[in-house]
Length: 210
Ligand SMILES: [Zn+2]
Ligand SMILES: [Zn+2]
Image (cartoon, rainbow, N blue to C red; front, side, top):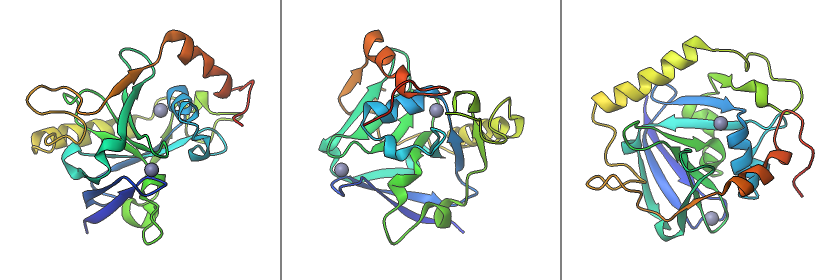
């Protein structure tokens, strides 16, 4: 059964609603890639990573997410000029959605944004269906996280295609439908800034977040 889930930043100033929230309608995966790790460190939110540096992400259709409060506190970050758009709040640096350009319609949201006290991500979305990019995990890669996971890939592509076909690409919470431009201010890290984050990320970090 699909239901509505609440999204909320850590301090509560930014909130949103996800409709059509159920294990069936989303793709929940733990990502160990070094970009996700670097993003958390750039935000000063290493607390969102698991012990192996994983980000537990729920991918949903763009049209499923509506931001209802605190939109003036949202900004985007790209780790490189062509990287993912990683949207976050500026109040407490909570990630609220990773996206590509709107041509590839999905929004990936860290599950902690759905921990509201009255609701847990497991209740709403079920547990993660898999893990990816374990070669970047800190220390020993978690079981099943390395190599190519074909069924996960097929599932992810199927979701995105389905959202597109069913008209769930718009409205997009982070892009203007007419111009295809982001609706929130955007920062792109320089190569130097990106490089400085590598020391915190797997598989063998040389520095620890303080
Ligand atoms: Zn906040
Ligand atoms: Zn990642």
